[in-house]
Each structure stands twice: as C-alpha cells, then as structure tokens.
Length: 60
Image (cartoon, one colour):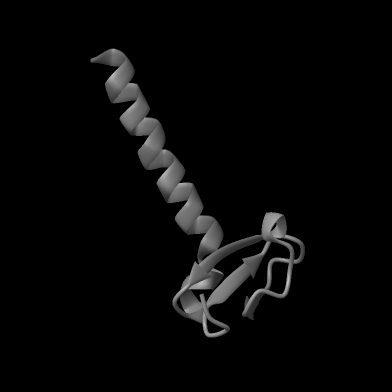
C-alpha cells in the first residue's frame, strides 16, 4: 500500500490519493485517478457478473 494509490469516497463521491477516509467509506485502491472515478461502475459490473455466475450455478 502506498500514498500513490487512489480511493473513491462513498461520503462525497470524490477521489483522493492516499487513505484519507475511513475504510468503510471508501473503495479502492485503484492504480490511478481515472480508474478511481469509475469505482461505482466497476462495482456494478462486478456485481452483475457475480449474479450471472450465481444464476448459472443455481440452474446447473
């Protein structure tokens, strides 16, 4: 972990370099600011992928 990593703040939907908010209120780390700005979209896509995998598993 380094202060060079980027985080998305769930409190105010801003991005910051380094850990400046509580762990429960941030997403990351991300390698750069642009990726951190996409944190919610990344999470949404990962959740959709996991849901699809669950459906496949449940329905055999």
